[in-house]
Image (cartoon, rainbow, N blue to C red; front, side, top):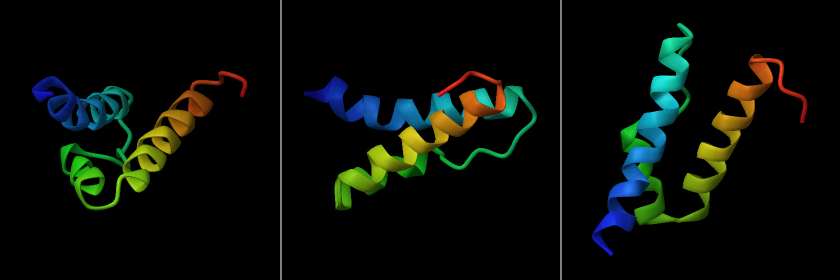
Length: 62
C-alpha cells in the first residue's frame, strides 16, 4: 500500500527529469500527485499527456 502512494509522486518526478534532461519545461511535478488525492483521473490524464508530448518531441510516431 505504501509503495502505491509513493509511486504517485515518483512518476511525475521521473517525467519532470526527462523533460529537464532535454532542457524543456515540464508540465508535471511531484505536486501533481496531489491531484490523485483530490480527484484521481486528472493525475492520470496529466501524466499521460506529458509522456505523450515528450515522446512526440523525440519523433516517436503515435
